[in-house]
Image (tube, rainbow, N blue to C red; front, side, top):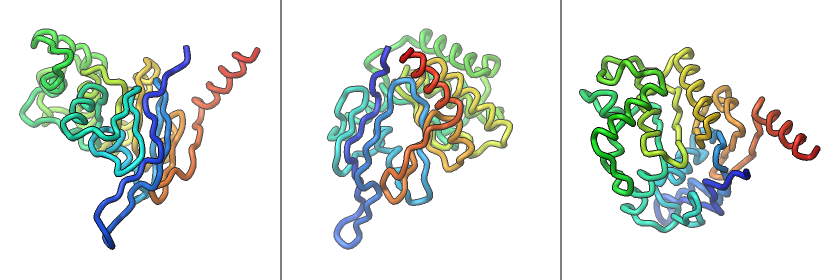
Length: 248
């Protein structure tokens, strides 16, 4: 079955300021990401990667251009409409975890359910879903632990479970290993690989080439433009093998 397109942008631009103070963070970015892909966005400071992430994540609007998310043109939605799309269709994993202090792991995971008015769940249903997701990331025994009682790697696992709770069409991971030691970072990447193998679409922003190589392809931004797109490692080899089989 052919994967459908989750993200499609056409000549996205983003300009900050006015007149002589104008700064073009994005200068015509066109990208496509299909369902089930694991893609990295890389670039040096000032390249526009964070701006692109904010637009793809429905956290801000482009100045011009078209952004189609899961078949819906959201280029011109207002703030409230973007928030609704964001909560329904996107899960976020942040470098700094962004968990609520003095709140249990379970309650952190189920928090987005409070804002999902399209598919409301009872508290019992939400708690059961939250527990299953915590088990999925290896924290089934930590449901009642608060963030200060968890390691950095465990906190990021809670954040991953939270990102999945609304069954998003894609997950955006912003430097997900940036605050972790190498061992914890590898554990988080292993979880992301498992999610990808289960069909989750993941867009990861990173400055680390070694982390980017975990993905299927890397979109490199420079000065607000796509400089190149690189196919990565064993994922690329797997795709070539599958394509060869299809032509036999």
